Amino acid sequence: MGAGPAGKKNGVTTSGSERRSTIPYSRWAIRWIWLFALWLALADSRKGTELLAAAVVAALGATISGAIVRPDRTRPLADSLALLRLPPRRLLRPLLRLVPDTALVIGALWRRLAHGEDVRGSTREVPRESNPVLHTGAGLLATEVWGSLAPNRYVIGVDEERDAVLFHELVRTEESLEPGGGR
Image (cartoon, rainbow, N blue to C red; front, side, top):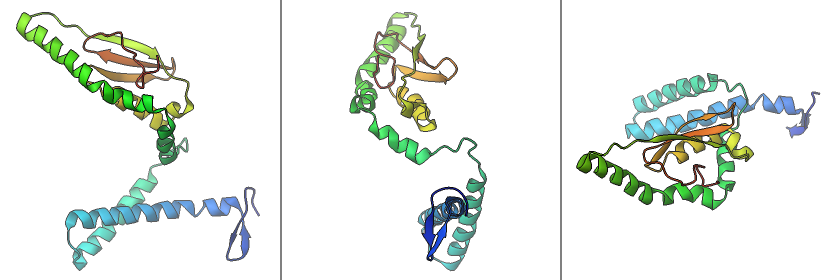
């Protein structure tokens, strides 16, 4: 038997490596089911030709998506769910900035159009938070998307070498640059 945690299959003890070999087939089947259901929902038909087309397209889609290899063995679903453990302040702050930031942008637009004032944005940088959840692929995506939600700023990118987040603000503010309001 191989190394790893053992399990039972039809009364026979199996190794962890044997169980892991069935995971790709399970993932393929789940993808196939979702793609098949999506096809039928979009086609809005249960005729034999639509069922056959749904089965073939779902099989192609499940196979192609399964062929995309994740070299770092990330766990996107688990990492995405881990983001929900962040404090509510981090998750709500960008939503609360929508109204004040909209006012800032409208004010800058008014100054530009009505008074011809030159409005200059600024690029700013903040160190990334050390929370390991934010250093996963899902955390990186959340930092970029959630940090860009407010109209006055957007995340240009995350510099993983310098461990910093780079922002652009249309109107420079002294507000925290941390996407969730850390500093």
